Length: 90
Image 1 (cartoon, rainbow, N blue to C red):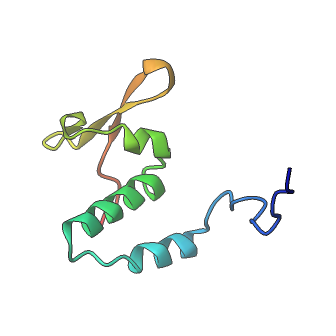
Image 2 (image 1 turned 90 degrees about the vertical axis):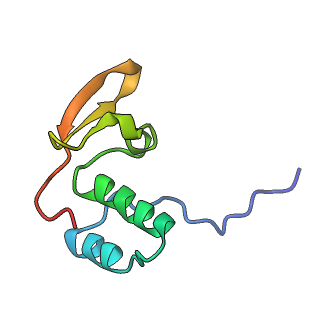
């Protein structure tokens, strides 16, 4: 069996600092709907601290626009409500 190539990065960065997050958000082009969606996902990850699987599990029905809240599903079917309007949500 051939050996596995070792040219891959051994580990992904654990987190980005605040400046890197701001650079990432500023680099987003938001002219198309799919780009706006991507920007919204990055905001949910960076500003609300949601995990990728929590963002992936969101549906429009989970967002209460009038109350500014979201229903977030966690491990084991656990559900939580979270404020969806932190300061500076762009």
